Image (cartoon, rainbow, N blue to C red; front, side, top):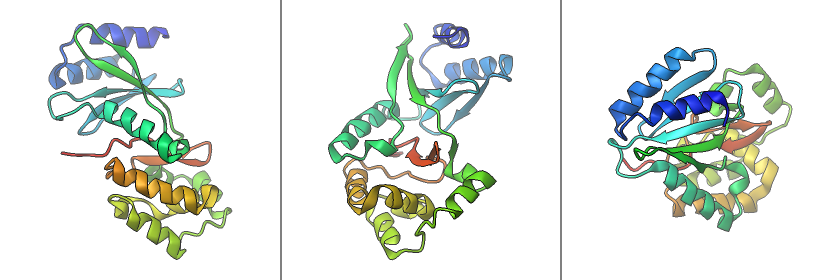
Amino acid sequence: MNALIDELISALENCEATDDEISDCLDGFADSHRRDIIITSGETRYAVIFKYNNFVLKIPRYEYCKEDYCQAEIRAYESAKKFRVERILLPIELYYTTTTGISIYKQPKYSFSTSDGEYNLGYDGYLNHRNIPTRCPIVRKITDECRDGDRISRRWMARVLQLYGKKFCRSFEAWTMENNVNDLHNSNTGWLDNKPIILDYAGYRG
């Protein structure tokens, strides 16, 4: 662990596993290290993004959720191996657990999300030169067969089809259904080294 991560863990060791305490701790830590990290949060997790590292740390939100969504993501990744679609998932692992019971998970950092990519000229130019079959009927069929598929970017899905083929996409459909991966909107899909990836695949169950 580097010094910045050591400092973060030390701060979290002084927190109870409650959303208020974790949120206050992360906000204070971010204020002290604005040049080095970004803190984001959704309904299920906090994310600590280190600007100069190639990974992020995720921390579950304990009070607003009925389950640990990082553990759900680990299970979904193991299931993806059975379907042979894990190559488009960013793997996640348990990194550290504080003495107060706060679990900290580690995941590789993506280049940018699909939503960010819509405003990235390099990304746009890269895709435009690949003749991606966005309007191909098979792309609509693939997204229609996925869990909550109307939220999946067709341009992103078309690149998956182009790189990995129809058989892979059919397995991907089945994986989303079996694992209830129902939240693949543009902030949860993205790109790493110009390849499509999913950075949040735990699904959402309210």
